[in-house]
Image (cartoon, each protein chain N blue to C red):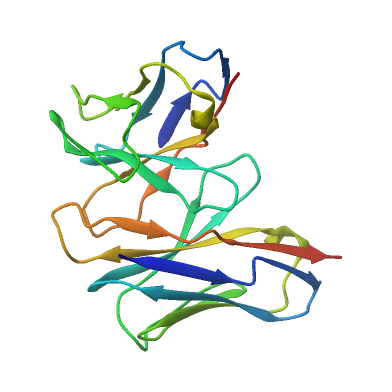
Length: 112
Length: 112
């Protein structure tokens, strides 16, 4: 069974204090790993897709990396507007639909 | 560009009542899914569709029905509401099986 574990569950940072969120996964044949951002009362918003170990992607203050067992979302010099819940999800290569399994998320709060 | 639109945004039902959650997308996506999001749990797949006229069960399908008569619409029906179905429901769509999903802003459903 595919599993996604995110840590920490919650993270509180001062503005400008860089940190990383972790996503550990087990999946039978990784087709892709996704990072989403979810604001309160909203649906998840797509950030990145990573397909193979060693791959990295960046967007503004966010950088996502991937190994064979985990992914990190690095946040550099965060701002209060980066406060949100960050979700990690893995897509299995098996089956026609290629099911996506989501983690519980990391709730990030950035204090001014 | 509306993306994925869900209605209603909020709903309160009594146990045993039935209702339909609406989902529409204007991106001509073939793949659509319904998820529920509960505290302490990741998004869980209820039902999905890989095109008009084709639907299948996800991991938590009991108590729910879906149909897909058009590419744009993917309604979710609660047959006889139970308190265990109190949750936030998200509809998502994607163009191709390996691409990230676009989510609506959810329907917050309470069953009394």
